[in-house]
Image (cartoon, rainbow, N blue to C red; front, side):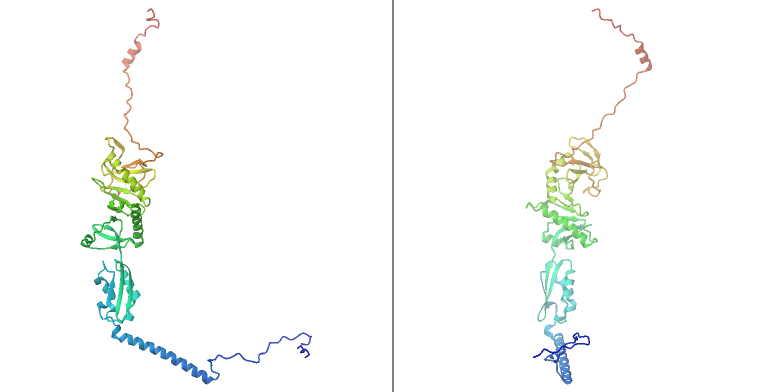
Length: 374
């Protein structure tokens, strides 16, 4: 067959025309071709949606009024893990749910309310069909005693303060150090930071398996950068400044030399171990720093508070009042301890009386040739 003639314009160029489609795109199988069919399809869809909604409402109404799913009383609430928290403390959280359908109990809200109880660290709340609520509680574990004024309480590793009667503490046979400086008015983040220092301190002291932390009676965490430990010693306790690191090393240094320090300074009240090249010793209130041989050192103790000797500001200056700088034990390049010895005042020579001076001048001098005859 001869080629089809091209559609040329007046200037001889081919015309640009759109391709023509004789067949329309296929219609979806579910769409009716007529308008009546589309109307019937819309009515059928509305009927299905209405039936589904009605079914949900009827089921909700059935569950709401069905006595099989209603929480009849507190006996329908089961709890596990309760040791320090009693059921009497837990049940008020579910007071609004008594008589309510089990499906309408807000479980997430009840869990948050349970965790607001001081002794509850975390809780889990579940529905158990047909009419039971099951609660699982994990309680907080105290790690130390805390003293606020005259009251003694407990505190956990996160700094949460826990109250317990003294009789209950005696029954549990708790054996913890007593912490001070954990103020309930401080934010939880600040108390948590202080407890982190305490946990690190006990972890290092017990790392060698000797349970050295059992020899500590009281720890002051007022300054989280300086753990001040009240070390029990014969006669009186000694306040030791351990800082915030290298606790085991400083504890061993203290134990190795405390006998020597106390023998040399009977009025010793405080030991600052935070420095690498020296330790700073402080005496008790109103006492002079005397060595074992009875000589008085150059530092005189004034104004240091009584039992703990830690209420005054500590300093690394060896020349501070009441402080004696001792070299780091075992270090050869450290400065030695110096004691100032009182020197006798220089007495000027006595001047001669004027008459004695003139008599001395008038005294005849011997002739140079005298005595040479022999």
